[in-house]
Image (cartoon, rainbow, N blue to C red):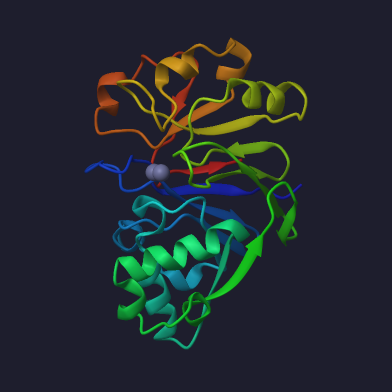
Length: 245
Ligand SMILES: [Zn+2]
Ligand SMILES: [Zn+2]
């Protein structure tokens, strides 16, 4: 069986100064998928000695700057080399993303009149498997984040759950583990305060132990060092480190 690796460009929340935006590289045999491309993605890639040209496609979970803020820069760097990056996203996010790029003045900066000028767009339907390569398949699962805005988590290769930013969904997590055989969960984690738009550490700690054992925490704040050793069976996902999934 082929091994698929995950290397996070960053594991921080939208305000983190220490950990970059929560964006990840999914590394298959001969195929690399960038999961989300936030404002800090270009700097994070540079620091890792990597180039956007090594990436085959970028996937967007939802329209927040820590997940899409680096897209214009990525598109620009492709354009300089006569290439267009493949952009995978839910069909429901295509228009909102374009509106966001227009609003931020990024479309004008990229001299784009439509999203297709910047990317080779592949709109996806939720709950349908998409095969990217011999060893990477995934489907989008719509999960709640901000009311009235669509956001999509990922089920990778049928048994790894990668959360978009999302509020606590214990039924979904239990169903994935108990009924669908999910054996690894990468989950956003707000360390302090009430979780209006994210899942809190306290909420994750309320899950049964066998589920907690499968969880790696990401999208956390700069207070992470204060919480080391205080997350039960769950470990922190570390930026730049390579994990086999
Ligand atoms: Zn975020
Ligand atoms: Zn968000």
